[in-house]
Length: 322
Length: 245
Image 1: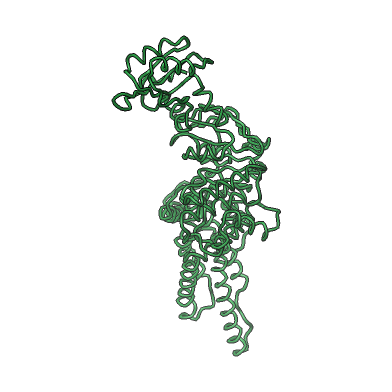
Image 2 (image 1 turned 30 degrees about the vertical axis):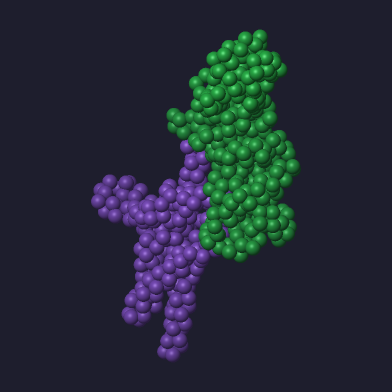
């Protein structure tokens, strides 16, 4: 379990991490999202004791990383952005070194063999790390984090440099590990976070902007009362018709799909369901509805909204007033 | 600490560094032995030990230049510093690994000494005189050279922790060695008595010379050991400070 309380880190006058608090529970995979330079790696480095925070607390299974670093680090497996590999060693020598370094108590040979099997590096275990491809190096880095079976895994972009098949394998592995470990995973790939993580923490410019499950984030930010519709008919008239619906707050013409079809985004009063009313009014005038969907946001849109405040990513008044 | 030490020790032999160090060390010690003992017929090895001091000033920085700098450059410090080991264990492990390589170098001087002692005793036996080889002086010298080596290694590791660049670390350490060893030259130009005494009492070279004269003083041993402790401690401070910067 990881608890982060009011964590701050400043480099000189620049505040890299600004008052971040969150908790990652046992058997949970927490996704760490944010644009480049948001402070993801800095936060991870603080959690693992590589850097120290300027103020605030980071607890690993209840142990403060600053007060008792050696005890706290025993429970952590860390894969940094750049895997910390000694290039002059073979994979097996390296894992043996990490085994000794972490003062691991598990049976050496079977434990290391198991890890090699999990990340699929058994066939390169006798090769010198320098000569391995980027994907293999990344996997050796992940293997290193798993040595000693630590309760907490902190993975900084674990699938970077892997091919699509390996990415799926590693994701499956992380999901499996998440069942009995606390995992924090950072990524730029939003679909990865959506596929793997139970909960997402979004940080931007060092500040925490969201901390929720993927579904909740998507739901809260979009909800049913926001619709996107495509209707065939004169846009001015259709717009007036739509605006006359009782619960409607705002109708916005998104774009002209073709000569006769226009796309609108509808913003109704919160809690109101205007779909039937839209259908009835269009049916009266025989204006066919070609598409109607609730503007449930994809993770990409949520991300953009949270980090730039821009709902549709481009339009100025697309209803981003929530 | 032992894990770090084992890895560091092995790494000297997976790269040319360890071999180069030992080859140069053996080469120069052999050369000096030939020049100062064999060609003159002397059995006194003090000269050889004294000259090795100057070689070590330049050679040991090559041994230590990458200890900390490479860790920082390759980001492997993210592994060592996030592992459940103390900074003391990390620095001591690295120090001991380099020190053992250095001792493998120094061991050759013992071999030379055995060789000369054998030659001395056989000539002595042939001419019917008692053997006069000064083992006490040789052991004093061996202890002295090992202590000075330990000081140079801790200085080298300290300088290496300040940079990411091996070359800067090497050149910086050579510079530092020159300063801490030869600043007693200043004593010649200082006329104030107490200041002159202070400079001489802090001079590594001056104290090492006493060893080569065959003077074994516990005071000097303590002096060298405290220098080792001070520089290893400074290295730990540098690593600690990096976390807070």
